Amino acid sequence: MTESAPDPYLLARDAAAAIAEASGVPSHDLALVLGSGWAGAADLLGETVWQADATTVPGFRPPAVAGHIGTLRSIRVEGSGARALVLGARTHFYEGAGVDAVVHGVRTAAATGARTMVLTNGCGGINPDWSPGTPVLISDQINFTGTTPLEGANFLDLTDLYTPALREIAREVDPTLDEGVYMQFPGPTYETPAEVQMARTVGASLVGMSTALEAIAAREARMDVLGISLVTNLAAGISPEALSHEEVLEAGRDAGPRISRLLAETVRRLTGAPAGGDDGATAR
Image 1 (cartoon, rainbow, N blue to C red):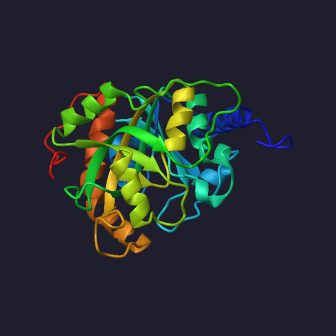
Image 2: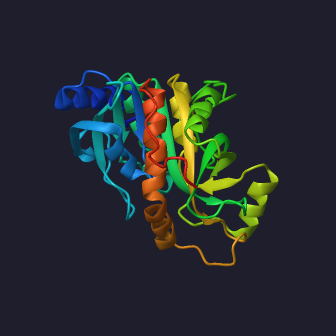
């Protein structure tokens, strides 16, 4: 943050106030960032009471990547009446807008009152057993961006950054879910085979270009965090195939219906709604 830049926390409060005024919803209970492949979950959560282009709200930027949406939605969760704020506008670190822009959605969600943050992404898988289309719970992370959303002597404890109790709720929906450590690289290049081997050596099993910075901001705001990755491709050097953004989008489209049901049912349970029927959420 430069001297002339707006206070990022004040900007988040302004954004939350704008959402409350436009939506007529004074506060939200939880929020979701829907990454590649996950957008369909929003349609299964319940009744959308408000939706808008994110750029109409202070601090939000238009999507910079094909296949990413740029809307904000307020949803009344079916079965519980809880309010979910769906953030379809994600700013990636590689866009060069600064780390405060990357975590603005998370800080805005916290300012609306949300106490739970659900972070999703599409990523590369290092474990060869995870074929494209496999959802994986994030148990921990490695922030390899070289930056942080925190400033000054803000010594934040990141033990159990991804709340264990929330992962257990997700496993009630799908007991076969595996978990792994997510490593965020700066991007926009995909990781090299050597970088993937480094990531595996230091304990990562998932690699991507989002989520870690957002999770830190969520923990700073004292939110519980659930992270779920969709393995859209095997990471470089794990598969002999070249990597491409089209491959990521295709994997997301193919897995979309199943992972959307998984996420929607998990969110309903997070908000105290009764468990849904057998809608195929646990199908592999």
